[in-house]
Image 1 (cartoon, rainbow, N blue to C red):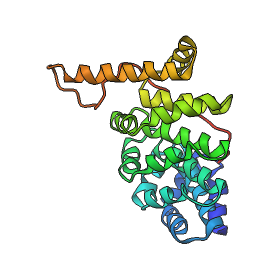
Image 2 (image 1 turned 45 degrees about the vertical axis):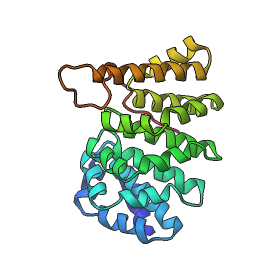
Image 3 (image 1 turned 90 degrees about the vertical axis):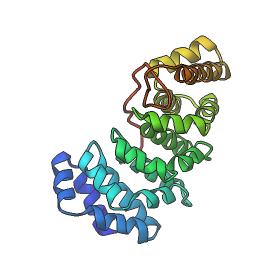
Image 4 (image 1 turned 60 degrees about the horizontal axis):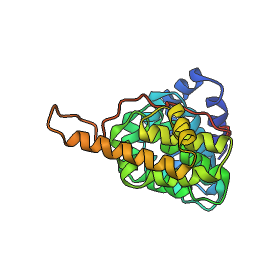
Amino acid sequence: MEAGLAVACQANLGSGFQVNLVDGGVVVPLVRQLKEGHAEERVEACTALARLAKKNPTGQMEIVQAGAVTPLKRQLMSATVLQRAIAATCISRVVEGNPEAQRAFALDGTHRALMGMLIGATMEERLQGAVALGHMACENPENQGRLVEEGAIEHLAQLLKAEEGLERDCTSFALANILNISYDQVVADITEAGEVDVALQIWQHRLSGQKRELAVPGPKKNPKYFFRSKQVTSLQTNLEV
């Protein structure tokens, strides 16, 4: 555990330390600690990996290639709120702006465990689950389509009814990235609709129209859904990692 703590502290000092640590081979032993350590050691490993991955594409891919995807998903189903929240934060950092990492976690079914966090008992796990889903969907049409099909927007809309402040912001962030519209558009839709359920109907109607557009003969489009608007790309939360 001391090694994980030391790496976490150094990685938090700046991008230069991140690069040096990743180049120095710390990722593999940290992933081993994540797989084999006891509960506290796994939390420390998650914290260190999250800091190594933050806005660091090389670190992100090192973590994926070292086999962290499945053990991080398992952490989302751990006994304590802290374990689940830190794991979700780590996943957010690893997938942020990285299509390959987004795909790796989606293929492992991580999004389903994150969706389960949306009905968690505490605000922290709901918040971190929503943010991680947003980062998995960001600029990734395949994951956007996957999350729409599995009911993520309905789950998030229900969460949006109950939360306020930062929690509402995080939920709107996730919806914006999954729907591939701007954060401001999500807020405008809710304001115009007057109720979350009505806004949900607006979003579902748009998605249905986009799928119908794909069915019209014409040039083939690669994304499963055809979106026109730029989405939110990042969000900071109150869990300091």
